[in-house]
Length: 310
View 1 (tube, one colour):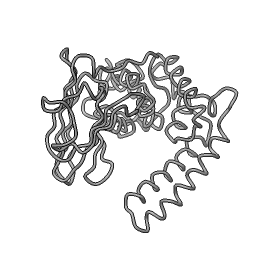
View 2 (cartoon, helix red, strand yellow):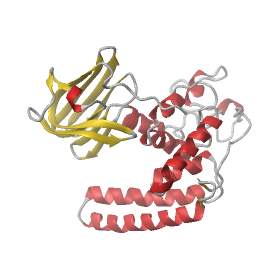
View 3 (cartoon, one colour):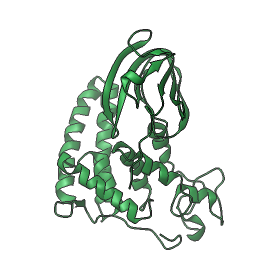
């Protein structure tokens, strides 16, 4: 795409609206489940309605011959995968078509804020985390890097309302806007790998970066999670707040892992160890720990990051 040439491809009218209705119902179901009590009963009805409308969404927009939804714009692959309405038998083909779409667009995104809210999550969750990361590391148009490193009007502390703001005039073209800031959700939950799934319960997943470090402030205290990949292997550190519990996903075989210099095993704060757990297209050892500090290690290439070729 060329900046200043107008909005890129978009779905047909009603596609994004239908997605949004179903997604809101899914969120209401999740919220009711978390609140509990009578809200949990309401959640069951919201979930049933979301599932029924999801089936209608698939039936209305899916083309079984072309293996695409709606008109084949990038967003029409992203949103059905994000909703979870794509049948298992078609998921791999739909995702491969999304990767093809990314490749045809020079390895970057098309579309707008709704597409970008879910694009990076979908890529990561279906085993192409490196493709999502590569998009964020770009500085040409269109990209997040373009906002901050373009030669015309580089952003400083804020995000733009439009990805090509210097070329789009003065109408609805703020330089201090939240429109594309949803990428922060991806950075925290996928790149940093940290998510709170219940009160005092966390999931922490080692990602594909060479190193990362994050801190999440919660009602029980701060959760710290970091990892680094060096020539000597993988090193992972976690600090779980008092009264908390964390499920830590380590991309290495159980027999290659150590905890505080000793072979990893249950006991001393480790509640459970599960090998060969599939997540986001990879295989992990899942270690559930109580509150405290933990330092895991795996030698050599045991914890190496996978590379997905697009």
